[in-house]
Figure (spheres, rainbow, N blue to C red):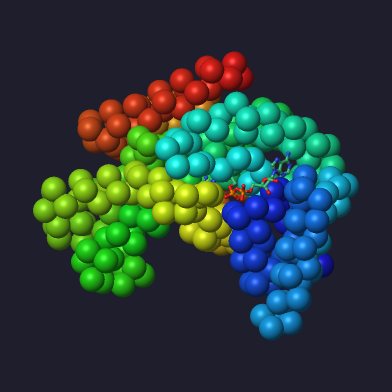
Length: 308
Ligand code: NAD
């Protein structure tokens, strides 16, 4: 029997993640949304594509939580997306209520699920999901760092005119405006970008990465990025369901790692069948540490606003 992945929110990110999962054939999908007809219509459309993709995955669209019962994995994309001029934190209160509400329902009927939170502001929403479900923190994590690193890799590949396959980028910290892209650990086939590009150019590409989401929001006018976010989410799902043990930057609960306690923050982790199998710690430089701490305090400020 295939594993069951429930995707909560059948909007742009949710439906595109559903597409990647069923197209790969890795799991069966339940696509849930509060709007009647939307998950059903999108699921039917995706189900009708499966024969072309030679995929034996099934997909069901629903407005009933009961259909998600017994999920192995749950992806939370329910909530509001950014509009032009909005930051991720502008979504705080509305999305906190939504994430709390859905997690209460989901935890009861899928007590063994591993949860990936996508809804923004993601680090805070991951913390809410963990607190609400009372699941082990190994089974509740957030998607952000993979997307940010992928954006940086794309910009670097255009700048250096080299295949993105040969670029490895690392971005830590909160998935917000003060994320921490680490140029020291960003390399082309092992050659650090600091050896390949002038500092000024690196700074400008890092700045573009920080504004990567807003750049797309400004083009779209309504809605925010979803292809790359869904691809990043799918990479996490795949690593967990296939027990690939990929080392990926994800938002996880820190309990003293990197000198930080009691918040969700983006750090490199190994993802396998149990969820977060290991948090990988390494020494940050003084400057990197300062940036990381700044990012942590932005997340803490938002958490304080919510009193969680
Ligand atoms: P969207 O508006 O296209 O879809 C959101 C869906 O959630 C809608 O279909 C809506 O009906 C549904 N929804 C609202 N309340 C719900 C509830 N209580 N239960 C179930 N469904 C509910 O938005 P999107 O582009 O898919 O983005 C979804 C979220 O993901 C946003 O918060 C966005 O900011 C965030 N996001 C995060 C990242 C990241 O890197 N972490 C990247 C992109 C988007």
